[in-house]
Image (tube, rainbow, N blue to C red; front, side, top):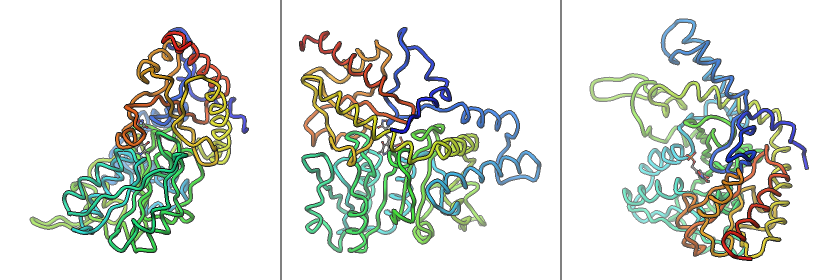
Length: 408
Ligand code: 7TS
C-alpha cells in the first residue's frame, strides 16, 4: 500500500477532537476535508486579488480572471481535457441538469428511451424524470447482479434504436461498485445514443482521461476531491457542447443581446451565466495541484488497500452485512453496511460518541434502497488521508454498538 499517512498533517481538521476522541472521518463520499493549501489559496485570492472576472480593465480584474482561467486549465488537465471544453458548474448535480435540460430537452421526444441504472444518485435520476415528463421519453433502468455490479446481460433487450441517452455512475456512492463504463459506452454507441458519466465518485479516486473514457459528457464536484463546495465540472465533447442549449441566461454567457434575441458566448462561457464562484475555482485549482502532487495512482492504490482491509475486518463482525462488491477490483472506497437490526442512524450516533463520522440514510439513492430492500444503510467511506488504524477504531466501535444494542 502506498503510505500516505505523512500527509494527514496537511489537513487541519483532522487534528480535531469529537466528543473527547480524535476525529475519525469516514464520510468522504459525502464531502472531503480540505488541505491547508486549498484554504490558503482561497484566502490569498480574497486578501490579494478579489475582483469580478471577465469585466473591467483594472489590475485586480485581470488577476482574478487569470486565476479563474488558470484554475480551469488545471482541472481540465487533470482529466486530460482542453480547458475550452470544461464548464465550471455548481457541482455534479448542476452539471447533470445542464445535460438533461440543455441537451435532453432539445433532442428527446416521445418514444425515445433514456437508460440509467438502479444504483444512481438522485442527481442522475430526478433530472431525467423531469425531462422524460417534458418530452414523453421513457426512463429505463438497468438492474444489478448479485455482487451489486450493474447487470449487463439484458443490454441486448434494452438497447435498441429508441435509446438516445445512457447516463450512469462511474462509481456508486452507496455500494462502491464501479460502473461498466466501456461496456455501456459501446452499447450506447452501437445504437447511436450518447453517454453521460456521473463521475462524482470517480474523478477524485482514480486517474481519469476523457480521451480514454470517450463518453459524451462527464460530471464531477470539487468538494469530493479536496476542493471547496459550490463548484464542479462538466466536460463535454465539443460538438455536444455546441449543440447544447444554455440552461441559464444572464451576464457572461452572451455575445450580443438585442431587445428580443441574443447570441451566445463561445463554450464554455455559454454555460456560465452570472458572476461565477471565483474563489471556489481558485480553491478547486489548488485541490487539483494537491491531488496531482500525491498522484491519482497512489491515491487509488491506497484506497484499494484500505478498502480491502476494511472489508476483511468488517466480515469479522457478527451480524454485519456489506452491501457492495467484496472484490476490491470492482469497487471503490464507499462501503455500505447494516449491523443486525440496529437502525443505521442509531449506529451512526453510537459511533459519533467515539469520534467516528460515518453516514447513515438513503444516500440520495432511494430507488437503490428499495431494490436492496433496506430503508437505509450505514456507510463508511475512505480517502487518501484515512489509515488502517482508523479502520480498527471503526471495528472496535461496531463491537461496542453490538453490546449497547444487546446483539452479544
Ligand atoms: N452523483 C454521485 C455518485 C454522488 O455521490 C453525488 C453526491 C452526486 C452525484 C451529487 O453531487 P453534488 O456535489 O452535486 O451534491 N453524493 C453524496 C453522498 O453520497 N452523500 O452526500 C452527497
